[in-house]
Figure (cartoon, rainbow, N blue to C red):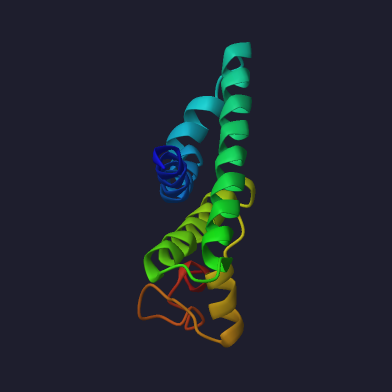
Length: 131
């Protein structure tokens, strides 16, 4: 029975930590440190970072989906599974699709706009209207 408990603890730890670790590995801190150097060691570290990131996202997503789809599980493992899927998605999107902004594009398609200031932009008070 103890080995089954260890397996369950490992699965829960992977589900809880894979997403936040993948988000951390795709942060600007690692990108700026590992993309500026032309050394072979920097390149090897960058490849290792990407491999570890991909493994974390894959395992976190698979375990999260299992927690969501297993019938009869209580609410807490399902919430942990959903947390794992969402955080792994965020880490994956930040690493491989950094220019994709789903919420901003959706808001723009719905007609809402975020403006910083009182000017609408076409009243002649901006840089274009100062001729």
